[in-house]
Length: 76
Image 1 (tube, helix red, strand yellow):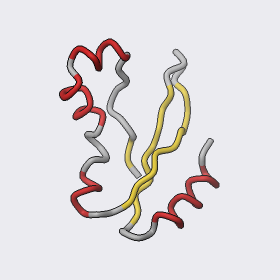
Image 2 (cartoon, one colour):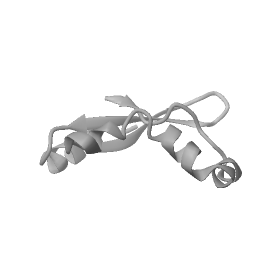
Image 3 (spheres, helix red, strand yellow):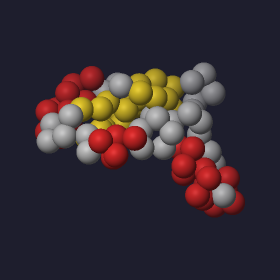
Image 4 (cartoon, one colour):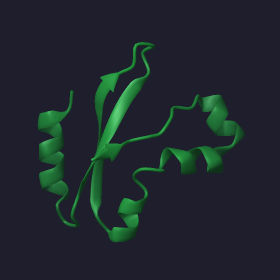
């Protein structure tokens, strides 16, 4: 389990620097692809200002169905 994103951007911020912003958004989860693992992001909470907080659950390759089933049970 890792945070889904280190920050949140507005659509305008992403449009201004799409490559850089999207690379930042994948900081904690993009390594999963290199190992051919599976991952699913789920909501976990909301900051006081209303910005959502997410976590990414990571599992071994071919465990997609089991990971999705687990995520559906623990998602807020």
